[in-house]
Amino acid sequence: MRDRNGSIRRFEEMIDREAERHPHNQPLLEAFRPLILTRNHLLEELELEDNAPFQIDEIRFQGGVPVIEQLPLLLESDPWEDLVRSLIPAFQKGFPELKEDLERLGKTLSEGVLALSDYFTRNRDEQQNLLSAWADTLSIAAPRIGFILNSASRIVLEKRALKIAGRIRELKWEKGYCPICGSFPSLAVIGEKIGERRLHCSRCGHLWRFSRVICPYCEHEGQEGMDFFVIEERPQEAAFTCDSCQRYLVTLYRVSDLNDRDLDVSALGLTHIDVIMQEKNFAPMTVTDWNVF
Image 1 (cartoon, helix red, strand yellow):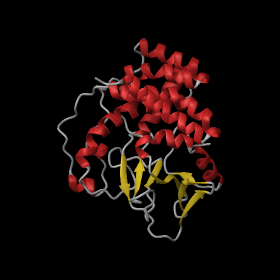
Image 2 (cartoon, helix red, strand yellow):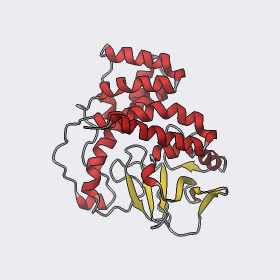
Image 3 (tube, rainbow, N blue to C red):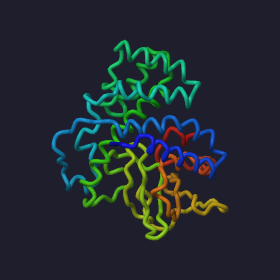
Image 4 (cartoon, rainbow, N blue to C red):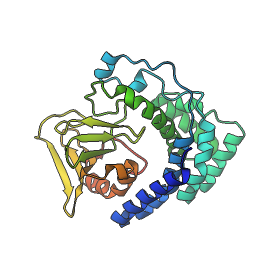
């Protein structure tokens, strides 16, 4: 039997610790707190039907074709309406300015007007077109609708990614985008003892190893044109930068407490680095709900 209260307390404590480390980012952490807690509760409780038998072409995979381009990871039969309805109260609590829009969205879902599976089973260009159409129908800005829908897809993708991770662990992967969902990383972690770099995907939560001397975004290799920006008074907080593609990657440097962290919470606590790097005219490797200003 799952200890739901224990899990909630664990995430509450991680958010509290991050707010203590970075009090200037506390308002952002508090805004996302209800969403993080609800998302992780839903992740624990969610039961998904299995895809067809897990079969990927290992040669294509090792050549850089992620799982999501070989197997569907977002299915029409997944409980999209239930997930979105469950997330709405968390969004209303953390982002009160969205309250009326979310009430309108919830009412529309109850009336069965929207088929949310249409969004999740389309490619990204088609998703943007559908968001624009729904925005006109609901009188809600498209980014606001996308905000909650992408939070629902994160839950489903992470649930499936947790099962897939063990099956691809022994396969070779040398790309800077996620081997499961194909998204670029939102955060990197360099361990205290081993010193290897691992990349974190904000779209599905997967963590994978990647070379420290190659840019994950453009694959530029070598020291020339790449740099490491470190917060002077906080040497664990850094950003990798690449002059070739003008991208940066927020990095936790030489950390020893990875098991006591949620990497999305850590990324929220490090948004001051995003601000600094964007002021230096670098762009993030991937856009998240919190790193574009």
